[in-house]
Length: 148
Image 1 (tube, rainbow, N blue to C red):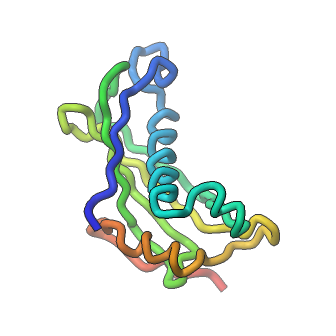
Image 2 (cartoon, one colour):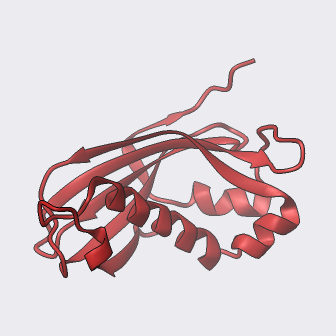
């Protein structure tokens, strides 16, 4: 699969008093990329509700490298950095690029799938897992070992 990328034009609501994109907006765009990926592969909100499945984040880390200003067009990609064998746990990396292709931020998220009824971690269905397995992988991709 080729790299999964989405393009956005930044909004007034994304800005802070320093006239650049507020720190949490970077994470909002990364989350939107994950949601778009899921929806485009038949795993939108309706399907997740039907399966009683939802994502849960354990860690979200952002490295800020360049300012993004209001009205700039940004590109945000998504790569798989790690996953457990059954797909229950996962790690993804997003790169946020400015319109001049300069890297503005790197966002790393670690999470898992949760059964919304039992409130326990659970692997996703096999047809859902295959799309994640096809994502571009980071150079340091690793298998995530689950705790007993």
